[in-house]
Image 1 (cartoon, rainbow, N blue to C red):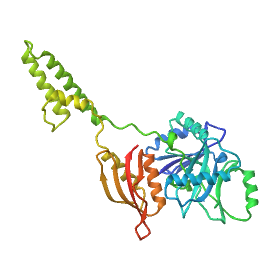
Image 2: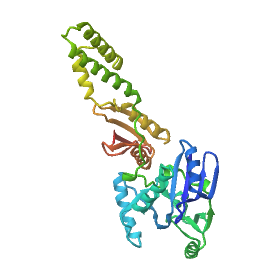
Image 3: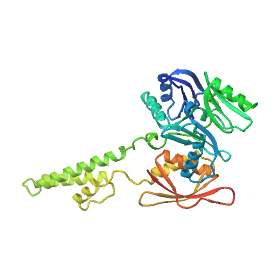
Image 4: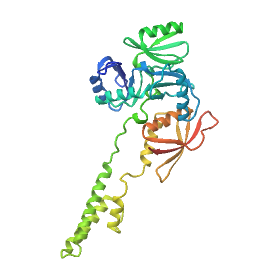
Amino acid sequence: MSFLLVLAPGDEARIAMWFDQASGEGGENTPLEDVARRCMAAGKATVVAALPGDAAISRVMRLPMKRQRDVVRAAALALDDAQAEVIEDRLIALGTETDGRRLVTALPRSSVAEWLEILDAEGIDPDVVTVDHALLPSTDEDEMVYLALGGREAVMTAEGAFTADHGFVEHVRALMGERQERRIALADAVDANAVPNFRTGALAKRKPLPNLRPFASAAVLALAAGILFLVATLTEGLRYRGASQALVAEAEAAFERAFPGTPVVDLERQIRSRRGRPSLQSTFLPLTAIVAEVIADQNGTRITNMTYQPEGELTAEMTFRSIGDLETFTAKLDGRGVIAEERSAVRSDGDGAFIAQLTLRAS
């Protein structure tokens, strides 16, 4: 479920429109601080912030390339021909592939960053940042879909999408001739995972800090063991030899509690070794947990083989229903801090599915 926010141009203190898919509640022209409280109360819902699309360029394109970087490069070249003027330092975001087509949207990086600062000031850290017209479902060449935004409208056609004031939209309708029109409500917005998302690169959603509590007690016990051992070493040979031996025994006991199952052979060397060792353990469980969560949301994607390498990488052979599913899978992993690289060319299994060999590692 998602919590959708449609932001209003020129009014940072209010939300043009919002909808909570979990509760089915929504509203228009609402103070941002009120929506922020509702948003935070939504818990684990995916928060989608739709920026005003008036300055965005959005086109529906056929991009058959397999690699994500090739898709982005081709989309950038196509948008160059569509721009009436240069967008300085633009960001390009891609929607998921549908029937061989996908929505490509460009915005100035500065506008995305400014809206993120405004939302952050209210305690909102959106998972997805897109534009308002990207929330509209795709359509065919004989239909126009639109979402009313007060005196403005977000419009989707078979060729692309745009947001403008009502007068301009009426002019476009006249130029396009007679077409079926379908007005939608925000409740009919497309899935949050399908829209172009500008939260990438330097603007990617902040990742929560890892939970280090499981390692804290072991680290404290190891430090205590080291301190006690040093005290024991200093007092060794002095007249209070009995007290020194007691400290050594206590240090060994603390070490065994910190590292159960590890025999004490040379306590000083073992403490020094562990003190210089990184706290975090193998990345196998975190990586596999993230992969499992992403696959659970993507029907038709499965793992046929997986191997964990000592250097912290997973090699996986996976089956996807389409190239678009593969790109969606790698994009979701990237959003979770996992880099996915193709080890070899993607091949067909002969039944319409695709097989890819990937290397996965933490970024």
